[in-house]
Image (cartoon, rainbow, N blue to C red):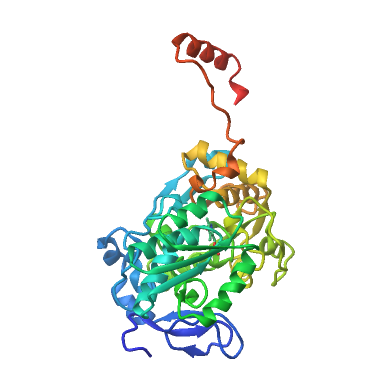
Length: 420
Ligand SMILES: *Cc1c(COP(=O)(O)O)cnc(C)c1O
């Protein structure tokens, strides 16, 4: 065991249970299973109480004992504690009694849930002595690595598919990161990054640092539990790219129960994908334990991973919690974005449209009962995927700067308000 490991005990293979030292390593030498951080829960129980948490600053680090850094975090100290909104208007539209939106469109500093995982990965990378960080990304991760690395004086290389949304590309370049666009889809980017990570002594947040990185997602679940008054919601709907966030929401609920922060209840975790890249939801609907890789073709580029690294475990979580999965078309994604915007004043990116669209389907089919309560995890900001809704969001009424023209317009609008 490392001398200064904080509350961490080891890295442990999810398949065979072999333990490894707490270094930058993500795969078991024996069966190639993924490594996961294990904690000293007995010790954590003494300090991580509801009362203690409530006195701490409003950031994801109020749950620091269950986040994998040895000392005090040094990157992303302001991340997290995003609003949990009671979405009554959206609830009525979707036909459910109680609905909440966990709004990570306003996460700090780069407007997506990825700020959570990056804050953990870069804090840990610094502890391990790295000065160069990198990632394979569908966009939001690149933005967050670039921004947080800049603020932490770390050099950043970010690798993305070359055909990403312009806004996601610019939102990485602006921070001075070296942005490498790969002519290929995400799975090819990821494969190249695995090769580079084997050759260069860099902290690849979602390759060799993945066990630490992935734990950051738990903070979204912890915050939901605290914001609901220390209870676990009966239904949580999560969109899936690699499937990691979904598995970590489940892990956060398990840990909240284990640490006696929330009473043990039966809860279900549901997964959402885009029809144009739905390896996990397709397998879930067919009742399979394994997914079949696909070639992505969807406007939800942030979720476009055809070979999801945690797909197998996401399927397992849905099976264990009796959760469901479904997927939605590009038109349904846009409709989901509009619905959330018009009902709640929240502009989500395409991934949010996926979550809303799938929630709507699951409620309509009775998979989420109408008299129950659900939380939707909204993970990214619509200002980064404007192209996806351009031409689908209504139109501007153009007039000359005259009161008369305006009043003519007003009259026409009252006569036929449906033109929007
Ligand atoms: C990365 C991402 C996700 C989910 O990622 P996982 O790989 O499944 O953890 C969801 N929404 C947005 C906006 C993302 O960028």
